Image (cartoon, rainbow, N blue to C red; front, side, top):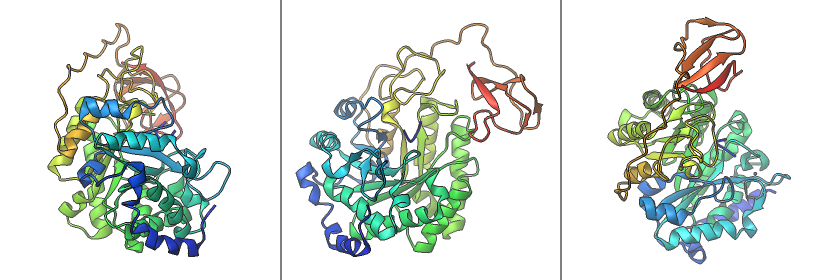
Length: 404
């Protein structure tokens, strides 16, 4: 859901060093002007420009005041090779559709970052032979679109591949060196402890290569999270991981930390409302965090007909909202004031007779057919289980019975 796809040689990669120094102005043909402030790139929500019923970026800008978009995702070709494509199928080299979206955004005073990786498809770090050839592939994207910002979304299954992560981190370092002023974010999975074993190994790889991006962001959803309090707790724990890994003090770690949320209903049935976003935004700004973004603008609209949180969609949030409600939190993080709109509609009441079952307990033993409530949803056990959070990805012992 969240992440809905051949190599240049080392000699060619060396050649990008000179080209890279001009890459940030090479996009004049694409409509690029001066870069936005880093705060805007840090606030850019994800947008799939070719899939999941892409919304009109210009209309979002007019309605919210948003200026920056995180376009997703650049991957290796589905058929193999080390050249950049959109979603594994549309070569960057011959692209006109995404270029048109970027031109529209820039004509209205905005700009874009491009995200590489994500959950699905083959990543360039997996397909390319080394960091230099991986960087050469990404440099094609930076040069074609005149990018001022890029996001490395390193998550399953790529971040379980040590060689691929070494290539990705090495490529990020090369791009940072060869494109002065390039805003670089690194996004990875979030857990209640901050991030898991593979996320920590990625941080250690960055440390060993001497690479420091503008931020390391975690995605605190799809892992048994339950509203904003669980997310801010994960951000606090991740801050401690950054401190211990890089030897930073707390303030420095927050200055290199980011949040990447999921608006509405997540893949595992978690619900994140507008009020949850406000709570995390308050946390991020009060701790001087570097980034606040979410997946995705394609989902930042109410489902039709409203489904009261009953399903997860790539094109709507499954919560009661006005269109682009969640984008306005990114606008606030960037330091702007969104235009005023009508109030958020009142959520549809839960029909009688569908109340919540007894709350799930981590210490209780459940057998097949037992019912509990967690995250404002009822769940039925499919087999014997204990201390397995309803909705967590691993093993999936719980059947989601819908909102309660």
